[in-house]
Length: 356
Image (tube, rainbow, N blue to C red):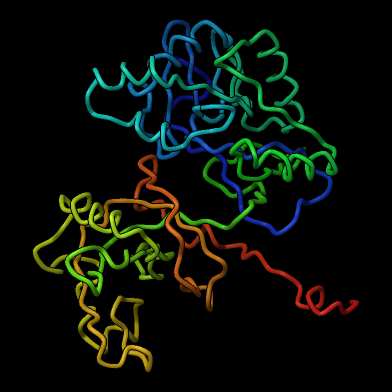
């Protein structure tokens, strides 16, 4: 493979904002696996958000892309699976499987699609420094004849239409709107776009759990985010699970269970003085009293998406986070506070009916 933009490429990211900003290019926010497609003749590679290849997990897409996209190009987009008119993220996660036979069975049973929304290279020209408006025009021409399972993502500069999309597309499993500066260059791994979501979510590291008061089942998952030094900070818990699911989680997390906390990022949790310089589980407080704050350490290797309302002091979830799903496409070191760098705020004056 010899392209003007070569793998790995870290995709451009988005920061959360409260409202749809004016003067942008707007697209729906797809709920799938972000992927960079590299095609050079018969060679096709699918790169994940982390740079690791996804190619072996989606053989049906490799074949489709080889037939439906320009012979030499680099595309940014989303791998999705649709069922009964809605996106199905759970079906997508099932595709990340070590057994090739299982992957090929699922490729026939639940085939994936690719939704393209940016063009990073075409023929012998790199387009990273080309303004978005021009990249979009080239992308539209390049995929003018594309047929399913390859799709061109709808885009508009009409903010009112974007608002309609935000309100209506949720019913199809999409989770918001992306706003992109029309003159913007493609900035790898930078939060240079804006996302408006129906609820705020964060990808967190699951680094331990506490047992439920009723017995040896999961009571709550302990969640972490990496700070700007790369230190994993305890940011809260996720605890609302049906009793059957609590028992399943013990078995599911058993391969990650550590005999003790030695070597764990939160190994010093029982030292009261350690809480002065780091956020650790089991922090003493007036609420804990004589409550058992012990927990089961897990190797901090698994990522989950959780929903939350807001952060307290920018450091932890104010309330119990709501578990949404596992994120096998994310790595623990990608779970940082940078996701939350632009807190979504709401003007109290609007609640009180006051005028500015």
